[in-house]
Image (cartoon, rainbow, N blue to C red):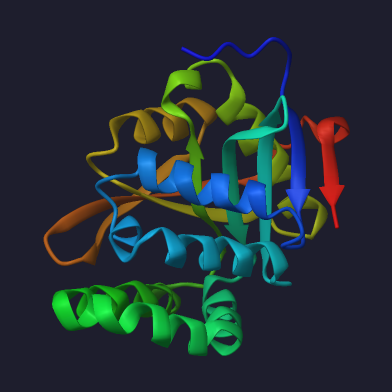
Amino acid sequence: MRTVIKTPSLQRIRTTDNGKWIAQIAMIHQTEIRGGFLPTLGSSFLRQLYEGIATSPETVLIAAVDDGDVIGFIAGAFSTTAFYKDFTRRYWAKLALGLFGHFATHPTAIFRCVETLRYPARVRSTSVEKAAILNFCVSSDLQGRGVGRLLFDAMMNELKTAGVNGVRIVTGADQRSAVAFYEHVGARKSAETEIHRHVKSIVFEYDAACGGQMTDQLRSVS
């Protein structure tokens, strides 16, 4: 088991210059969220996704770094719909080339992609779209040591500074540790939904003004 000697540094990643950190974020996602849909699209797709999140004006990507390596990350969006549009506009050629073979052998993945892209529009049709947590993960051997709370508070502070109040968080109902974490930090369970058919998710709402106590620890990488 890896031991964190000191509090990890928090880095807001704004460029793709540090490819090592982007690759490590993608690997943590793929390793720790095995039951999710996005890891099934492959490591190359995940790297492109986090490159897009790092460089989009619609998103915030924060990494917890210890001894030069990423040990956890959190990604948020001011508008999920706007980010999806920005990401597909900038990466459509790479995505088409990289995913063609996967879709040819896994045609159901096409429908799951459509379900993922349509979800923000479904939410917006019933309420005002809020900022959202896109993905949030800490390496399993370092969970329970406060790294997740550092990342969460840093993200809430970034969103609050940008004028955001309400934040929507969607997590799988079977992700028990994630559900317990959001309940612990004071997020309010507001609904249950299905982004993908027959896969239950829980929707939490959080007031960003309640978080963000770690502002002095966040550095910007640009």
